[in-house]
Length: 225
Image (cartoon, rainbow, N blue to C red):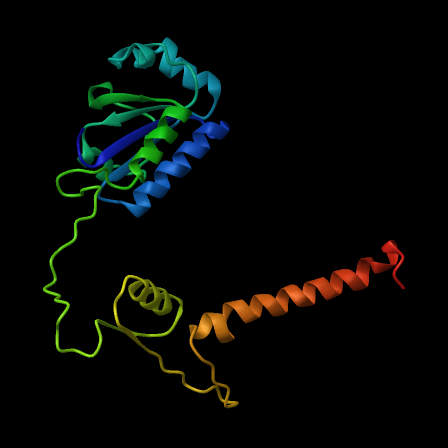
């Protein structure tokens, strides 16, 4: 398969499947401009699309049997020539697909979505990306001269989790945290901003206020004066 992937999508704007696929592939081309390129072929209506694909015999240029029998909108295939996409005067849109540029038939709506999902999957395990984690010797020895085995800077959620896990595994741990008082002089202990004065208190206030409002609005319907 050539790189980048050049996806030709043919159909008509009145087809929701065509619009979904072009939108999906267009998003990939924006995220990965060096890996995915989109060429749209909008035939305007179903009659013109079928005249081109079926009556005109474009589908006969596909190698796959499924491609030679394709009748639905959209039809998607991989192209060979990236230069042709870059030189397109209509911004990646063309109504004259070149049969000689076909590299491989992909399919219709479902097959293209499956390809997009597979494209976005994390890298598969290989020699450069082993599935199993491997511990690397870091030179640590139990009888070192330091006061602590591990010093964690930051007493937020992550720092506390790391310190607790290391302590449970038998390490001697020191956890360092610093709190800058608020303009009103408020200070807090371990846990970080989120737990003490951020996300969690905000959610508690929000839920409490929502419950009070619901009770005030609905209590009469339950016989509560």
